Image (tube, rainbow, N blue to C red; front, side, top):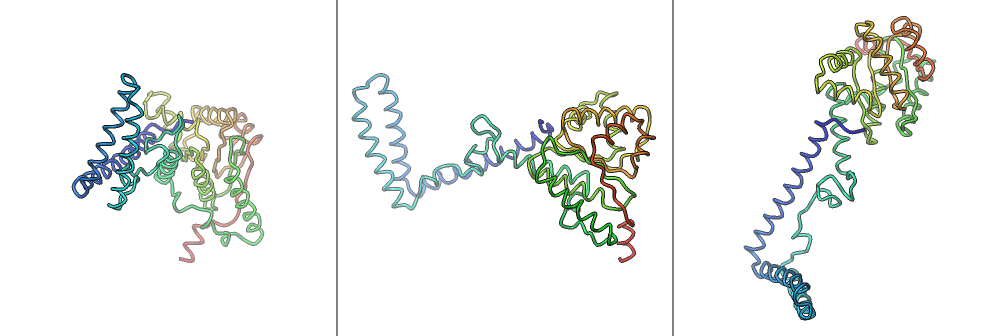
Length: 317
């Protein structure tokens, strides 16, 4: 799955800035070298001239190569001695790139460098935070204390399953349906999963159902370029989290889009997590038996029970 254009562009801008900064610092170092140790700079230039002379001789005067190689060897020894006396190393003369493997270009051996992937992962996470309370929703601060004794045991197992889901995430991972009344931690837990999957280098999209339907409609009927790219990401991302399914205005169009999205992602083995206050029967009534059949038959249903956690916090607060 390719990353959104704006994120890829931003990653390349960050890499270009790193490269420019490394080369600027190198230029500054070389300027100081020329000023403070002219003998070292003169030896470097002399050696560079000898290498250029050797290149020409290899073509036009091959019989002179032995003599030039001897000069190069002597020149290197002289340069090393001068650098040692000045306390300068070879590394001081080269750009100090953040990533030596790709020299901050983002590509190494024809492949995307891990440094660019790391930048993209961070940008995806920041985008996730822009559209959700992801920074506030982690496994570490998901408290079981708000569930009664029986449900606490069940939710403890759910949390462990979600942690395992993150550790083992791949194209064959299950689709999840988090269902239950508001305020029981569905969004919190799904975002904790989303964060973990992002950190492993996958493209994760989080969207509320009302916003999702608005954007899909804009892309389909207005042919808006940004909305079309958004549609491509929603259908093709590694993990999609849909929050509050059922709170959007349900029409024949939205029913069709929900089915198309659920069905396409199932057929292309791209896992989805759906949070909803609806149970399976409500889903069938709202979205037709086709949607119900796909979700009931292929999603792992996780039922959240208990008393609204937000209300509990307010009462204690």
